[in-house]
Amino acid sequence: MQSKEPSVVIEVKIISRSGDSVIIEYTDGSMPIRLVVAHSSINNGTLSNKEIEEAAPYGLPMTEVLGKVKLAYNPLRLQKALRDRGVWTLHDLESKPTLVQAALMESLQFDVSKLIQLASEFEHGE
Image (cartoon, rainbow, N blue to C red):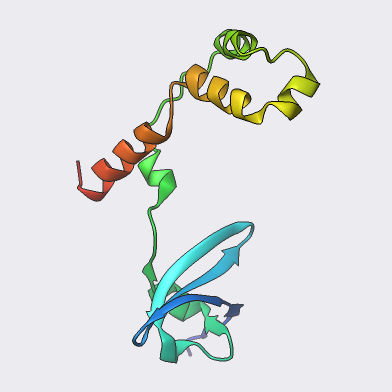
């Protein structure tokens, strides 16, 4: 006799709907996950684990998009970038978040345009 794995029920939130298709969101640990499912498959705001496994993913798998990125972290480069922007103390870190962000982007040599480029390459199979 073959044992069946018990069905686990997962609470989901509907994000948007178009016809019978909906984008739902649930949390796996601390990670928000979005999927596309048939609206009719949702039962009182829940889906079974089987329905979750069979659903179409929504959004970019950022771990795969960023998988090839080698961040060039160098503490001295970050220190220089922070000091060049007048960020020297804890108070500076707390009161100048925009300058801190710019220093991080400069020192890591990674910014929004690079992220967009990688996502575009991923979507186009490059």
